[in-house]
Image (cartoon, rainbow, N blue to C red; front, top):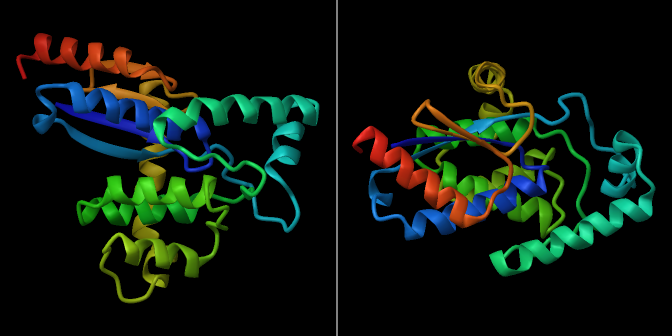
Length: 213
């Protein structure tokens, strides 16, 4: 069974969805036959890091919300993340462009390390408050996940990896993904959002039953 997951490292719901899906997968008897493919989705391709510009500032502007309301949403997400092992620290999370992170994920696909890289990027962004636009930080994450490369510039400046990201973004439009996380099971069943483990488990069982896999 193939499961494609469109995601962006700046999306807290994607982090929650990842953990919920993994919990479901751990309960699924056919988990050894599930192939997970992480797909790129850019929430804001035009954004650039700016010193002192907080995630609260950013979301308040683009959502048209009062900062107090944004902070309350962060508090709710923090509570949701705790039982899943996620330590959200929104106060130190930086507003960054995620293109380089996506290129790193595309590189990791080639070496069978995409799940490790995804988790490491989420942790670095939401818990450690790392600036994921910096090559040195991304290179450290890559090395810690045993990704093989000579110079990180071969990843961050790669036109081939750029095209791979663009291809995923185009595919998202074709499958109807307007937001993330977005899960597609065997090119037939789609789920949008960070659902609970029970929902994901039911879909896995349904797809397995109908596909004979």
